[in-house]
Amino acid sequence: MPELVGNVLVGQSGGPTSVINASVAGVITEALNHSCIEEIYGTLNGVLGILQEDLIDLAAESQQTIRALRHTPGAALGTCRYKLKKQEDYNRVLEVFKAHNIRYFFYAGGNDSQDTADKISKLAQQQGYELRVIGIPKTIDNDLPITDHCPGYGSVIKYISTTVREISCDNAAMGQHDLVQIIEVMGRSAGWIAAGSALAKRRDCPNDPPHIICLPEVAFSSEKFIENVKRVLAREKFCTVVVGEGLVDADGNYVSASDKTDAFGHAQLGGAGSYLQGLIEAQMPGTKARLVTLGMAQRAAAHCSSKADNDESFMAGQAAVRYAVEEAETDKMVTLVRGETDHYTCETGLAPLSEIANGVKPLPREWINEDGVSMSHQFVRYVQPLVQGEVAVPFENGVPVFAHLDKNRIDKQLPAYQI
Image (cartoon, rainbow, N blue to C red):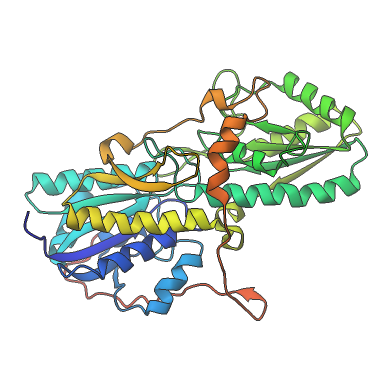
């Protein structure tokens, strides 16, 4: 197949992670190796930047800045949760691509972002515009189908497990069989993040915190929860509970959710920890119930991110370019494929965007112990390799140094578009 000559556009979408910028660094680094790629552009704030023709020249950034993306949290290009709502939106995307000769589009994001990439690719095919679209996986939730795991997940559970251990040192000093520490973590539809806190336990100490892990996959019972807390406090000086924000009751309803929804129709979560705190205060008088909500800190903690996760995120960005340029692949998302040997290895593969879009991979029920509040050895074996190694974050005057893009704007070619 003849080379496709043209420009690259890379974007980021959805909630950032501490390693999503490593994927952008991978795209840029690899794109510079291919002569058929003439320019390397970034879209500011995902599809919003495309609609507004707000593009920047990534090839103009210094190599030092590109390398610094490897240890910079957030989304350096900016992100969004905007959903392309109407046919005019999709037509505008193609108009921008044509105006800037975009022939390669790489989109780093989760379930909804891969759906957007798939629809853009399908429209280009319908209009006879040659475009290669490759999705790059990104989500701390670890719930994308097909891929073994997702860039961003290893780092978030490394941070959470570290935080559980640190807070537990404080709790051990303060507790006198009367302290319940609740730690609320992210995780809308699957309990991968909460489950990962099990890594805080030392191998030879099964009674280490977290003592109770509340997962969306296990229907919540207030009676059983209180029983479990009392059982822990009967033997330990304190009880640590990790709860995923997507906790549901026996009817499948969130125990705590806002009436508001995001652009994709998802309920805005948060408050599961407060709900558990209220239960303890109401049903266990005299027991102190403390709540820590990690919020965005858990996905922005570059200082405690996983080197394995960072390396795989960079690798996914590189692979996206190679698949598109060298193998003429399109309509696909890069996947991470775990080796079958005892020694952990990881390589990349591909899966159709249509099979990724809007799908959710639940935490396997067999990886949850029969008690419903702790994780099996098989789960620990799965996640342990994902948190290995530390990213070298440079410090200046005692605080970390992160990348700052110059963001040299590309001249607009089209009339303004009303969103």
